[in-house]
Amino acid sequence: MEKRLGLNSSTNTIYQFHGCYFHGHQCDVTANIKDQRWIENREHKLKKTFDTTNYLKSQGYNVVEMWECDFQKKPQVHAIITKGRPTFYRKHPGRVNETQILNAVRSGDLFGMCQVDICVPEEWAAEFKGQSDMTPHDYFAEMSPLFCNMEIPFNSFGQRIQEHVEKHNLSKKPRRLMVGGMKATEILIAAPLLKWYILHRMKVTKIHEVVEFQTQACFKNFVQEVSEASRLQIWPLSEKREN
Image 1: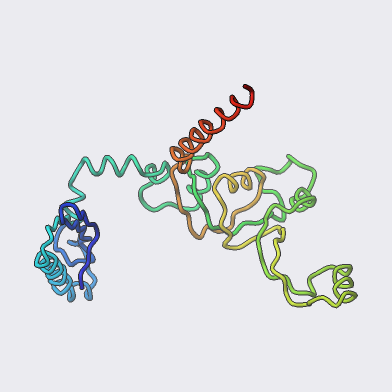
Image 2: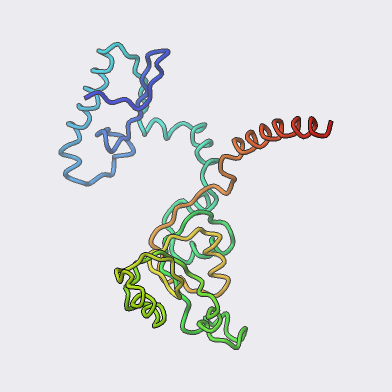
């Protein structure tokens, strides 16, 4: 089957990037692989890659290929990639623990989305004790800090709502509503909001996943162009009305 990663139709050129592991290439990238299944299938993967290239060439295409191991040896490429990496990843390119992640969220070094288990603690952590006469739950009693959409069964509604439903013969099926709570599991939270939770003494009990982004305005140039175009359309109309 034909496979193309990139195509320049004006020059009839196909661009292929081959990951050394997935394409069975023997090199520095795969030198330490001990997976017996990969070793047994390596030649088949490599042959399939060459067969694909030969097929594309037989169809009249120019084929430009880049192997992962060769890509890693290009310093100018590394400079571009490094510049594009977000702050926390640049500081911690290897494995990290939950403490490092939470400290980075607190300091603002990590910007992105975090999937966590979080709760209002039963009692204040040692670093917060003595700062408030209220218990954690009393502190958040006026408005619960966490919100999520979930199915609420009829018997979880208060007495007045249940009486209203009974009186007007309304459906008793579970309803999907936005509710507030004191704890949540696997909730996806933007890092700036998670920072607010942490600074307001909430407790993260587990981190499931983190996706980091660059700290910058999304579609900034596009927004500026649209804003400028709008101003150019509005201002002449305003001048005409004044005249």
